[in-house]
Length: 576
Image (cartoon, one colour):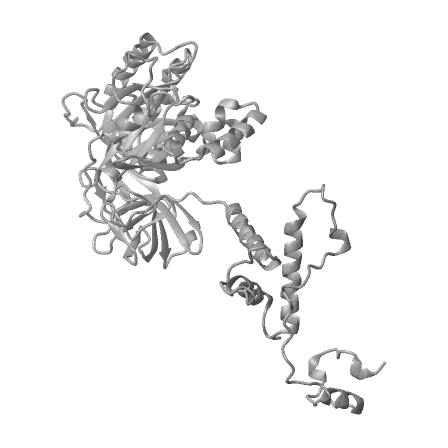
């Protein structure tokens, strides 16, 4: 074999020498007519039909479309091969569609439906079909000129299996945030697992473990809009093992919805000592929730059947307890019957329930008075969660102040200076944010590993306080034995969870008169109120309750139970 005919191992081995032209080839090239006319195919020639495409008259006539497509490809290739060598296949297709045909003076298809006309029709219909196959994503319409709706965070709390996630899923469906097709898919999947009634909760319980067990673990997030307001749903877990997650959800809320089951036995289980109906209501109040809507769910159950007697029975048992926790029954609490599974009394009133004359749930939310929030105060954004996504992303609710793009902020307590790259409010990008909004911030100047839940974003000229020692007023809610100095517990303050020790008991406070004892107590027990000095294991961000209530109220927990609730009175400076 001639070595010139084979490719070299690498192109570097070859010298850049011009190819030598042999005699016979040179004479053949010289005879070529380089000025010859360009070859133009005759588009009016008789159709070429291959033997395998010949069909009988009785057969289906959809082969015509295939034949036209075959011809169009054939003509296109011929044009490229015999015409301008630089022309690409894509250009040829575009020109075939765009340029008018020479045979037709008007530029339209031939009246007798020649192949060129068929070709254009086939192409356009195919293109339309391709466009229809692309799924359309559901995007919340953003109108830049429209006034910004008031943002309200609603946390769903209550005992396990009361129907919190189901009501949340039903609300999302009724307000058009979840498509019917998606819910039908969930229903099919739930039926396969013999869990037909769980499908609505899957709109919020996205985790596979949550779906398998039917129990919410992490606080689910979703949002919906009414005419006047924009709501964020925070679906808190009801199980006692996940109360710390529920506290994190409640700390972000403006409004709590306590879901109780009217079904015989279920309400009693949730309300008796150790049930989460009591604990959640108390924790919501401690977390700073002022308004409470009590949804009496499962009213369509055969054991209840929209019974007024059962509704009143649940109400009578709950009101004294909620009053004891600190809610005003006349101003702060609103009771409402509903059915989460059927959606009764959530958006439309129920015909079978004639004794309830108030508004259904969603219209009632829309009619609530506006929450007073000050955007003039210092920036305070407690961090709930963080992750990596093209940079460091943090999640949290803006408690006070306002944040905008490219703003310089400080991450406390580590004093990292960060810059806001982008700002998302409920997954919709925005340029600025006001208090009460749930935000996702992409930050520059800090790594994800350097942030912990409980850190606070502040503006540089007004930093939040940080420290380890503080004096607080504590109410002992449930504890079997006595509490002495040296007692350890877990402190939940805003979004921060930290180990804490009671280092000293300063005085007892009389519940009725508010008088303080003159002598230091040696111990405190259940139902007593005391002022104590606490010291955390690490440095945390906090404020006094008087200056900033959202960051000055806390809960003490031990062995999976809520031991005490309290408020920060004074921050104690560290001794060097």
